Picture (cartoon, one colour):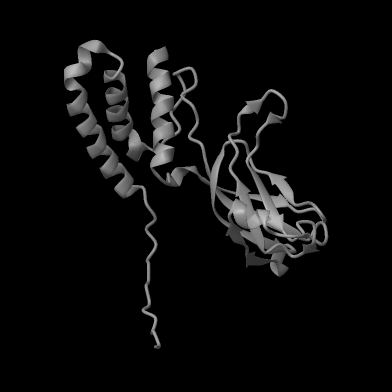
Length: 203
């Protein structure tokens, strides 16, 4: 049972590395404080998919796009303490682990400019969270029903790597797992329409 629980946890970590798992997308918000550039995200955050700056609230609220930038771009901003409406954000994807000196290494956002007033701006985001651990093995796994076949096939493959007697079946179990993953991931995708418009080029 301990081996199976460890394998389940490793399997769901692999799924997070393979791409976006739609059932782990969650919306969140952070009230912004004047002059404050850095804010913590929930500790189980893998990454942000989208983000906006929301001004005011209720019927008067407005969501304004905020551009995501790299650490290199953020590092070259001369005055990181200048104030205004935030227009750029650097997502610092820390480990979420507990560090002996600094405590928990929360994933963070760093906005620029820093907010020029409190209780006016809200950072609204859509995040990917970690799939919950298997726990003690008696709780329901944190996956939708459409992923169950893939979970079973993946667990069988992972366990075959640890059981000497199953070595002759590793390749077969891996192929079965990959087939189930392809079926499940093809279903677990965004169904919205995509429109592409050609752009004229002038020489």
